[in-house]
Length: 322
Image 1 (cartoon, helix red, strand yellow):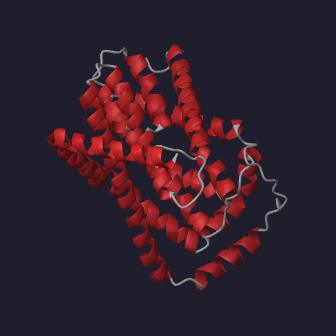
Image 2: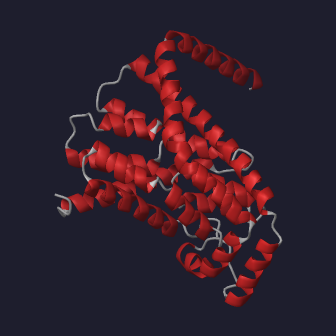
Image 3: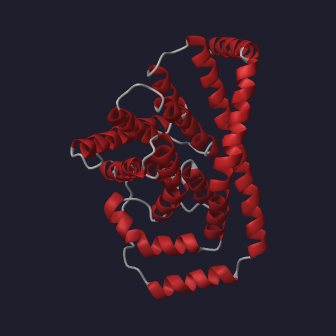
């Protein structure tokens, strides 16, 4: 078996290298596009959140807010109290930030791997400004379309969390909240923290994660470039295939197809909630030191995409948009 694996990997790498030379011009353009995407969109949108979240974890704010709101999320999702922080921070910053927040909490041993696998299922959010501005306004020239995709995407996450609330379920018996005690603990944690050390550590750690994300995006875009040039898929198959690999490319190509507007919106909703294998790869690369159950995560992303698409379909049927 080991010899077969070695032979398979060797042949795959050899073929991949050949294609790098054959499509070198297009791949160079892809790498440049990937860098510009990272520089102009991903880095400025994620870097501040990564640094701030790391600081919040180190000064004890995450413990404070999680203890205050833990009962709400426990009743809704039967989840660890830290899901509160990850849920709202991911909603604001967009994927793959949930992976980074989970890694920080795993590193601090505030959650275990079973809890991380569960929280990851329903904290998979796209950046709201990307959905409204890029998809809604830039692609469809309609802020309303952006909002309906955004709402369906958010509702899809919540429904997924409720449907799978008993996955890796752990009973929480500490339900009483002592607000005075929580405030005192938070205050003590701040007083005992060297903010300069925490800030520098947060910046370095965030940069490592963002470089990791850039490398993963570039790799998947290169794979997408090679495959689309080999098979030369016609529309709309090219846009659908692209969306499953790299969400942004798929959404861009989908907008140029001859499909009806309603069908484009429904498929866009699926792309956003599925995220694309590139986003999946970014999250896995951030959490590479931990045992993430990817098959479960992959299946849930398909379910999330179908739920979001169904919500959009129902809204369009009711003529809420048009």
